[in-house]
Length: 235
Image (cartoon, rainbow, N blue to C red; front, side):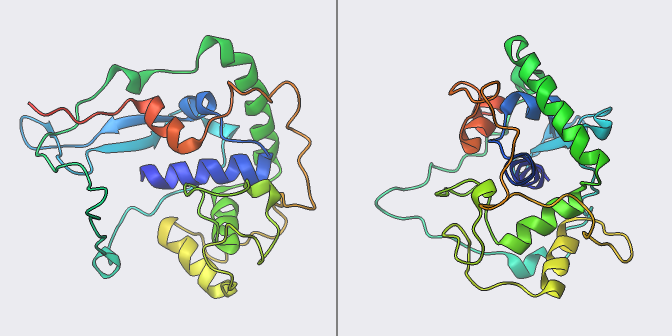
């Protein structure tokens, strides 16, 4: 669930706002939670950390309902190599511990910028932007938001874009099938008439001197870990 929210947030910021993901606005929208099991409750040793949308976000962010079942995941399970040159960290049985930083909100010095971003998000939502449009754009473009890329999504240039996972386009049915694997779709869901994502020929007017600051925008993989300060402590 956490990765779904991260991917969606990066796509909204880059493809529909034309800006890099802003960590403080992300803090305003989402909060982490520990997943527990047993009595007394303990954080589960694997998958014990999740992201959830904060109550009261309302029209500040596109709405969507994630699928609440991972049925069929066995068919997509895979293994990766542990290269001898750069070995993965040693596996431990330590459970993640909840950190104080999980409840941190927006930094005071960033509140004005967050207010500007919130207003732009609100305009998009009022024009009909929802999670279906966001994830439909993601699968249609075949760009992986959390991977290292050469350009942001507002500079997407079509099938020849170097950041596409594969150059071949997916069929409409396959795009909708993939959206349906991550979101709960309504009957006859459509994206026509909703806000169109930016690309190399449709540029955003949002990015201006107010928002462009080397201290504001960060590589989102760094943002993810610096925000949550998530460590697994071994007793």
